[in-house]
Every structure is written in structure tokens, then in C-alpha cells.
Image 1 (cartoon, one colour):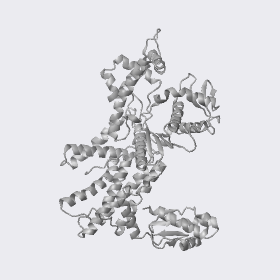
Image 2 (tube, helix red, strand yellow):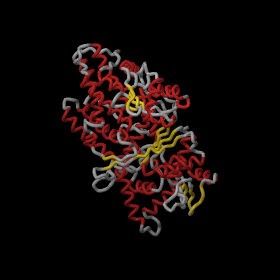
Image 3 (tube, helix red, strand yellow):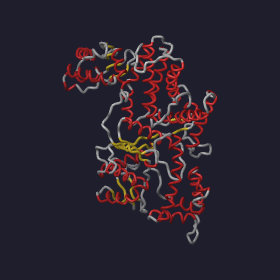
Length: 587
């Protein structure tokens, strides 16, 4: 089984070779959906320029050589040379039956690759805010999709668990006590703990005690003690990280994402390798000293003054920054993890940083040309005012509060519409709708674009939303329940019946599932899958309205329509699973 575009592309390229010579066999037929037929071949214009012929003459020559007898009606020439193609109903039915019989529903089995995905990356002892939503949700959708395609995915949660703030945090934890209620905030309200430590630091930073016993002085000393490997400092640091993990678990469980502790690979992971990274770059002549810091000046990057732009890998005080850690991580991911492809699901603001890191890693030989490294740029979540979504006080909006609000809003609707359902089921449905609505709204927007956070729109039953898709699935599942309740026979072995304009449109849509998932995996663009699933749900709605299932008296027709609906359910559910969105049994 193959998607129509792929079959048509192969047939037309064979025709190009036969009509114009083998050197033209690689020309793109430009197969696109058409409002006048199922598809259109738009290659005549481009070939006309190559061959110095009129486009309509090109189209006529193509028509003489293209073999579509088993696939489509004879194409019609339109306009300056477009070829309109109408697929044969029996070919569509045959391909749809093959997709239905295939466990993978037409998804290709690609050559497995090892893909390392760096996503989520919250900070220890800081609460995740709405800005972490997109990196987590987009990264997880890509991981699920790539695994479905057969790739080996290595998740890397590059948490911020090292550096200067930890001296401050350790000293604060020692003061309040590791078993105190304040310490418990690391699990429940990390920002409160962090802000309390910061307040102590700021209050004493400008006026240190003569003997250095003030909080700020102790915090600075603690950083050096920690980085030198002091056992007690490392023990307390380990406790800080462990408490924060419990908080991360709550968020990830709430979001239904696949990240676990085994995927944690924070900044501390690479601490003992940073000096070697600097030494190797310096010895290779790639890094040099500039104003007391060790820097790399990758080719092609200049500042506003037109001078080469530095990537600092060792600060003038001897400390290391993000660039050092990211370069070390790349070397590890390629050499130790065996990455064929690396995706960094990180905010758009880091674009220049990653371009310079990738360029440096390639020059050093740590990122060979055979390995793809991509910055999956993440846009911002905005409020109704078009600015970064924040609380009224101007602080970052807590992610947990936002998720709880979404579930609470969904629960209110479910309680009103379905009071007949058990409380536990209403709670589960509310979670699926609330969290699914938030995730889908994020994923349905191109990941490098900003979008406005609007809960009412996210949870609407109309439009390109998760609830609309979830309702389509629930509607299909209700067909089976009602058939059983009314003792209406449905042949489970029946092939999907493709009939009428609505059935034809739905079948053609279902044939696009495999190629769409493949495209999402190749381009790292989950929004393409959302667009596809929405169009599929719309096509099913039109089919369901035009071709009643349980009211149909002909048993064969009834079972054939039910089989087409069942395939639609499988496609929608699998597609939503790729996005990390659950489809409740009923709504």
C-alpha cells in the first residue's frame, strides 16, 4: 500500500523518462490536491523551461506516456498544462483495505536511526513556569512519533543542576534544616524556597561581615567547596536534586509525558569533562585567549561592530558556561550514545548560541557531517495582550497552576453535561480533556511561532482543538456500544466500504496517515500532524452525516461503513498518541 502522491510521482517520473529522456526522470511531478479532481500534476511549466517547449505540448507528451490505467481515469489537461487526475474508486477501496489490514496503517518502516532529543530542561529548586510547557510538550511529541516510526530515541532532560546558585541554595537548606517544612517546599513550591535563599543573599551581598560569616560570603565559598568535590556539599546538593525530582514527577505525571529519572542528564553530568573540552579545543588551535577568557571564534559570526563574535568556553575567572557544557554534551551524544541525529528543543532566543556551538563542534570533529544537529526553535506563550504570559504581578506563570486550571475548567463542563457518569470517570475525562486541550493547542501551532494562551478556545468542542478530535473518537466508539445494545450485527472482518463523495474523501484522507507521520518525524514539525488529524475528523463528520451506519438496513453496507469508521478511530487515536493526547472512551 502506498499513498496516492507517491504512486503518482513514480508513474509520472517514468513518463518523463520515456517522453523526454532518462535525464529528466528525477523531475518533480509536483503532485498536489486539486479542487477540480483528486490531484493535479503541475510539472509542465518547469519541464517547458528545461526543454524549450510550450507547457500544453509538454502535458500532451506526458499524457501519451504515463501509465495510470490501474490507478486513475485518463488525466485531463487544463489551463496552461496542468494535468487533473481522478483516482479510480476501486483503487482507493483497495488501498484503504490494505491500510486497514496493516498494523502500522501505512506507516513506512524507515531505516532505524539513533535520535537524541534534548527537551524540557527545568532548573533544580525552581518551579517550572509556562515557558517550560512548549519545550516539554513538543519534545515529547517528537520522541513518541520517532519511536512509532521505528527509530531509537534517547531522551535527554538537560536540567539546570549545577553552578553558582547552588552555593546559595545549600546554605539556605542548612539554615532551615533538611527535614524542615521550608525544605519540603522543594517538592511543593520550589520558587518559595529559591526566593527565600535569594532574599538572604541579596540582603547581605552589599555589606559583608568582616569575618566573612554573612550569608552571601558563605554562599560564595560553598560554590567553590561544592565544585571541588567536597563530600558534605555534594550530599546536600544530591538532596536538593532529589527533592526537586519529586516536583518534576508531579508535573510530568500531570502532563502525561514520557520523561523519567533515567532521562535526566543535567549540567552536572559533564562537570568533570569540561576542563578536557577546553584543553582539546585549545590544543587543536580552535580556541584562544581573549580578554582573559578562553574563546572560540567560529567562522561567519560577527557582532554589531563587524568583529568576530566570541563563544566563551572558559570565563576569565576560570568558570565554565553553557557553551562548554553544550559542546561537551555533543561530544558525549555522538561518541558515547551513537547519535545519528540530535534535536535541541529549546527557546528561539538560543538560536545564535546553538549555531555557534554546532559550528564549533563540527570544526573540532565532534559533530561529523553524517550527524544531523538541529535546534527545534520554540516560540513563546502569550497572554491576551500579546505579551509573554505572566501573572498580574508580572512574575512567570506557574505551570502547575495553569494545568490545574485547565483540568478544573474541563471538570466543570463534564460535571454539568455528564452527571450520570461515576465521579472517578468524570475526573479521568476532565484530565484528558484539560491536559489534552493545553498540549494540542501548543502542538497545533508551528513550534517556532508564538501563540496566545486561551483556555476557552483550547477546550472548545469546535475548531482545531483536542476536544473536537476526542469527541470524534468517542462518537465512533459509541457506534459499537449502541450496536451491541440494540443487537445490530457488524461484521468485524468487513473491509472498509468506500462509497459516495464523503466516503471517498474520508478514505483519501486516511491514506495520508503514514506519509504524514513520516513527514513529522523528518521535519520535527508536530503541527503538521495536528492539521492532518483535524482534517480527518472533519472528513469523518461529513461521512457520518452522509452515510448513517446503524440505520442502514443492508448488513454488508452497514458493516463496510462501520469498518471505515473503525479505521478512522485507529488513525485518530494513534495520531493523538503521537502527540501525547489521550482519547477518552466517552465524553
